[in-house]
Length: 292
Length: 273
Image (cartoon, rainbow over all chains, first blue to last red; front, side, top):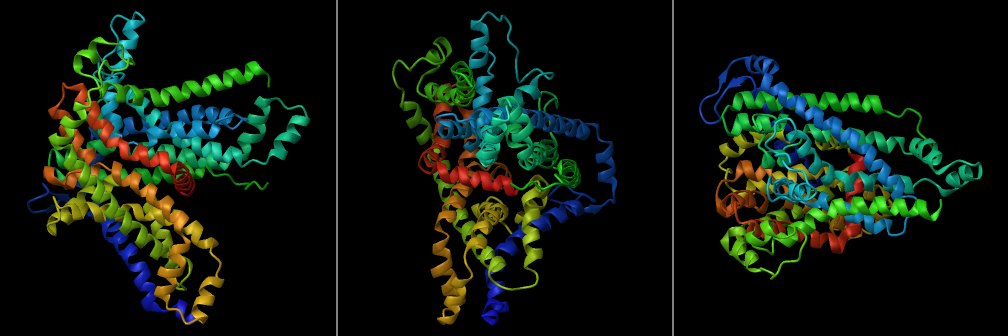
């Protein structure tokens, strides 16, 4: 039995296709990204080794930190929005008829491509014919904002479709976790005279703490990687007001053909993501594993 | 809680539901109107006449090609991903080798990395083997980047399969290949369905790889194609709406039929990530 199951040929046969693809197309490029970052390179011609110059430029690059700041702002918005999602999930899990159908309806935007979502919201934000401004004008607002053209509100305007897109996803996760709490615990609290609010905050919330920490990691790390939606809606504009790390890197490489510097920024993006993932995991770690 | 309390809870849930769904209703409605009606009429009014010709116009104007590219690239990448991930799950959970833990760890790390960090090196790798502007680069990239999540979803199921299965199979003189392809793989059908719908959603919606590696119109998929297309029809809202509806329709239809699988896949992909 063991002899058959530890045959080296079979092991190689079954693991090789997946492992090779992972190594060649995921891990090697990551390492190469760090290496290309050491080069002066336009993507087509010769690479010239220039040491850490690109990385030093990157660390001093105001435009890069500007884009990183926007990415972190989106991460904060996304984390705060978890409170809304959590509230909705609490309501949804409180013996609501049709909860299953509702959570599926909430999920629909999550299934659509970011490109389609971006195009749709560009239309929603259209200054004169989008539903948002049509509505605002119909209730008497005379000069509704130019949502995507105004540098001071564009990031908020971009965040709304993000909120819309991911709502169903987080509600789904929270709802499943809340439904997992044994009814007997809730019943016991109710008999002891706990109000629904107390049950939610003092009993249910601590019980799903672990799931909440996972979603915080997902929300923050996910935000640092945002690209498609912003690239299509504003391409980082107006004047860099909605530039994020990934869109800045993309612009450097595929619009300015600065592959060396773009690689360095891409590598910094990787390092920042890994560090943030590590820190957030540490901060949200739940030490006492709950058993029930 | 009293009746009034429940009334407000339902009200809140319905408001959230409307926020989620109304933008899509509006999209569908304006996809059937012309500009005069969109700009002058009420946003949620039914079209005075259903202008299906918007759909016909964009389909024949190039969306059809993008659509078929999306279909075959999505399907091919799903088949490769699900097959390779199943084989890997089998190797990791059933076969006995020292490095299996390390390899599993590599796939886990693969879940976290930002694809944009790998984009430039991938581009130059494909350039050096002449795969830029070739859909093969897209298919293998989709496969590689969806392997970790697919493997994670499959693993949970593989761990629950009883070991008696392969013991019995080995005693009966069954080869490893037959054991995998004829016994284990068919047993995983329910979870395979989940991974298939999840992969379908990912592949159908993917944008940045196609946008970066493909330049010929003839190879573009819907997400990238509709970008150019909308540039072309910038002022014709009905056509833009029809384009967007066509691009999201297959996913919506899949969701209607397989909503439980989608829910299952999305929740298991999140909790493990």
